[in-house]
Structure formats: structure tokens, C-alpha cells
Image 1 (cartoon, rainbow, N blue to C red):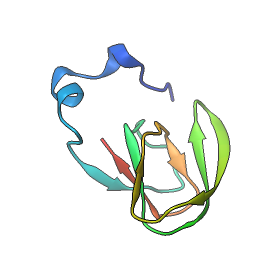
Image 2: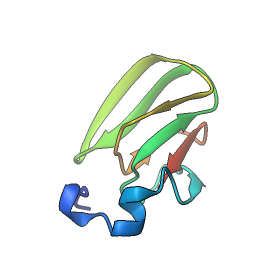
Image 3: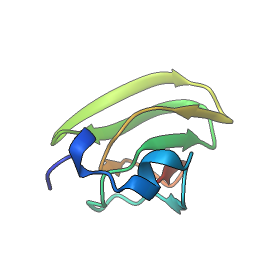
Length: 79
């Protein structure tokens, strides 16, 4: 699945902070604009088809990371 670039977002998506929130799954999903972390731990996110482990992510924090998959449901994808 191709990651979205700056040219791929609609005008409404570009001007709104976030339009929807979806609980992540271990399956491939649409690329998100950011992620919200529900619990602190090491989370593995798939970014540009590469799995990247992030340790020390703080619960209750929004990270401006565009990804397509995570290793658990403690990550909320923001669109």
C-alpha cells in the first residue's frame, strides 16, 4: 500500500485537524495523518512498508507519524 504524500490529501483533509479516529489493527490500513498512543510501551508501526519500533512513546500523546499498520490496538490512527 502506497503512503500518502502532500499531493494526496483532499482540501477537507488538509484544513481539518483530524476527521476521524480508527483503532489500529495488525492488518494493513489506509495511511493515517497521525497516531494517538493509548498506552506507553514499545510500539511497532509500519511506515513506507518498513516496520519501525518506537520505544518510550508516551500515553495520551499525538505523534505526527503517517503509517499503515501497528502491532497492537493501543494505537489510534487519526485521519
